[in-house]
Length: 129
Image 1 (cartoon, rainbow, N blue to C red):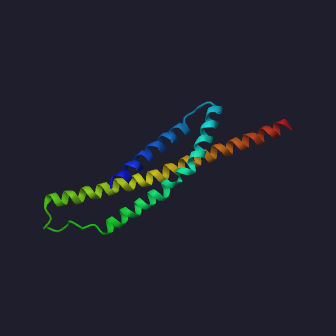
Image 2: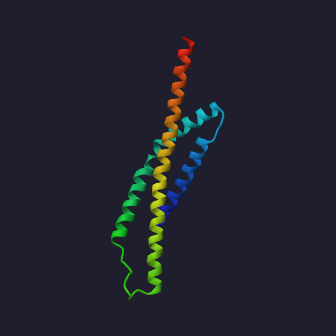
Image 3: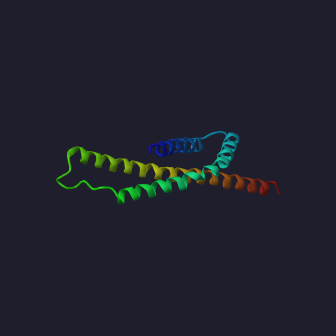
């Protein structure tokens, strides 16, 4: 059951590292090659969006069908287990949301970089004319 969360955590860590590498200043040639490499990687890694969405739906379904421990009959251990499961669900929602947000940020950074590159080429053509 925890394997999907471990995979999602590794994906979020990799996305965060890529986002940092994309935003660090670097020489233009290195940056262009790095952006083109990440742009090639982005399309196959799009699976993270439906995967995170499915996990969010799973969390929602489990939350709707979770046994509530609010009565006086609950023991302290049951109450602790209930609170722990709520905290885990909240952590996992943050993880899913972060995965989607980081993917979108990396996509937009690459797209902006490509647009800037094409505008620079147009500017260079106009200067040569």
